[in-house]
Length: 128
Length: 417
Image (cartoon, each protein chain N blue to C red):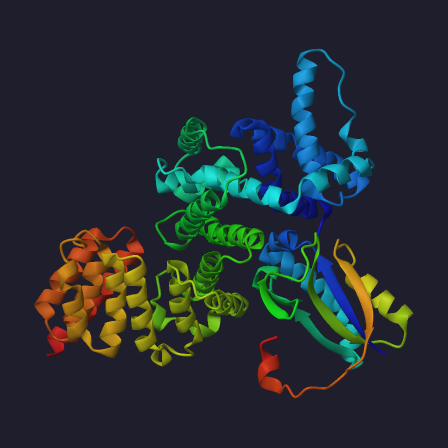
């Protein structure tokens, strides 16, 4: 089963991390990810740009409004997500818990389906 | 990350909002700072035991305000308020205050906090120093080292700046739309000053200076989150991100400045560039051009060019013309001349800058650029004279040594002829 692990955190706090702190967190997570990587079950990790770069389109009556900013103003923001292939919820919960060890981030696990594969080729995904 | 590091990050990121609210309560920078300081000390004691509060800024405002009131009451030998270690449990109290801090309210709080640092009587360096101390929470020592002055001198400078601000009587009522937009403009300028203080290599500790750029970017992100539909704030953030992206390539291993066209573009920070480009894109949709957006668009063109030779100088020339129109200044015309020299040649560039000679006679960069154009068309004696004047005006050894290289190349060419 494919799962998305959505990462929620206060982006102000994450933005105040130094590069060293940021690198340390990612390195720690990567060590856990390696188990899945070795089994060929680790999907992409997506980092979303800050919500200040977000644009939201909403319907207002019959009009489509294009608004600056994220969908909702919340104390914690969706900052990115991982895609993993795990056998069951127990496995992904265990994986996510170990990945978040020592962090105050919140992970939301959402089982997912590939709806359509799309046709991105290597070029676009290189910069991820 | 250690617990202490996490708490420090939470305190740093909560600071503008908490300080902004405390300033509104106390209407005095020093009292607001003392209250915030006290709240931080209590947070360091309480949070490791009780865990972090749901809303650190609301907690700090609540505790900071009570601590300040508490000390007044203690002075009057009255009963103290309940100890703050219970506040983490006082979910109701916290929710209550968090609700009162609705978005619009704290938006103006933070804007006001930044705006008090932009008093027009304060010279640019004092605005920057005050913002770094008050909004960002850098210690006086850190601010002093960024400016290459000793701690006592900086302490005095900040105290004087605070006095000015207090005398200015900035109104504490919520600003109307016109006032809000004026404040936003002043704050944007101040943030860009912070950035440039870090970006222009006029001395000081290099890591401190780089952190000023990061800090300016952080403040601008915060401002944009509060005012998400302001294209000029998007432009400013994009401009700083795109410029800062080049920092790993701006100096060589010996610490010498590397010109844009000679930089190793693979060293540029991709994440910054992507975010900057996304913001330029977003801003342009508003069709309200402004100086920051145009400068960001110029920076974006440089970022998009894989090599210096791929640079779209025609478009850059057009953007500089737009900038000249928006904010006329001889320095902008001088910058435009670089694009002109690439598209129409050095003669055309020289012609463009000739009328600027009087106004820019004391400007290092003017003579450097002029010298380069002159040497390109073989007017060696004049080029040498221009470079010599540039060296005399250089503010840093890096600037001077850069021009000296031009002179060396010039003498090699002359002797080869």
